[in-house]
Image 1 (tube, rainbow, N blue to C red):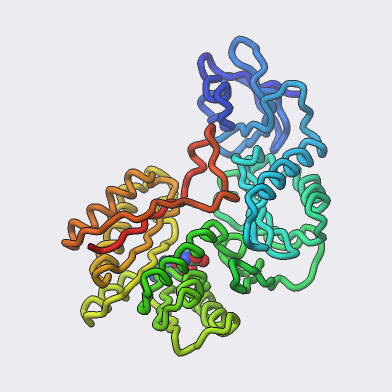
Image 2: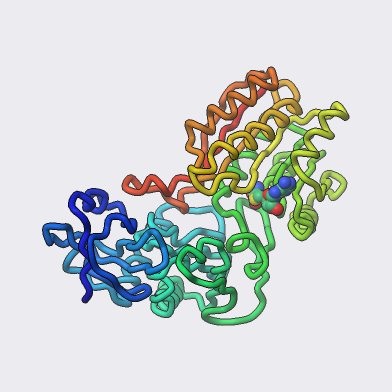
Length: 393
Ligand code: SAH
């Protein structure tokens, strides 16, 4: 077993159970791609077992802080069992669930979503790539399923020196699946959809949106960055009769249109707009249109804190326009999935947008990702999705 020794004082974050070690913290030691190593402090104390990433600036990702633990197939079985036990306690009202959420589930560099009878995984770091076979077997055994599709076509793999991979790891067949969320049906293709196919992290926020639409009697609803129309279906379920989905992806909008009829709603109550959101919002303001409820769920504008300033301007822009389109008493549900923009900064951005728009609003809720995308106390980096629900005064 190879030993990696840290520089003096660099053991502190591992002692707090934070799982990453950056290049600059290492005094000596090297290992092969994904190899399990023993990590020691400058004084020679055991710190953790970790996976070595030769190409990444995150050189080590901790598997375990328990010296007696062995990193083998049984280790992955235990971690997966613990992750599933947590989900079972959440009583999630959907057959679409995030089963493994990386660091928060003690499996850095692994994302696994379940869509009905199909598992979809992203192997995003050297360690999980090296253990792919054992992880795949453990996942199927723990869930009793037979199909695992890999969507390791995310850009972050490049940092690990890995090329994109997409295809079946176990099982085969059609990649289209039907998801049941709340009382709605949503179709997706695990080979073609964004990320692993769908945005499960917004599940609870879509359900809450339906509730708000009903409570407010909102009729005119604008769903910006709609993807396949999850929030639009929620709006129709809440009783809205004039719902507009805006997205720049044609295939996503085709799905949104399909979802309206699949769920038995009147197609005349829904319009799909293949357009840029910013331009659409400006156009609607010129036309004097107003909405009773608006969703702004843009893609990640700030992948890291370094992009926070530019991203802040982009968030402020769309939120200023969105607020201007709200009818009095109307609700804006605005989200950011940028890890680089924290909840406090996001709040500030929306406040600035309101100031510029000359509009004040009540904050009626502050929300995050659904709890099957857990945040843990030791890993604050895990927080990414945040949302504010504001009601125009
Ligand atoms: N709210 C969705 C997820 C949104 S993901 C859900 O609940 O499922 C972000 C979406 O923004 C993607 O579908 C992407 O195609 C779209 N998008 C990105 N840039 C855009 C732009 N400038 N104008 C319109 N849509 C955009």
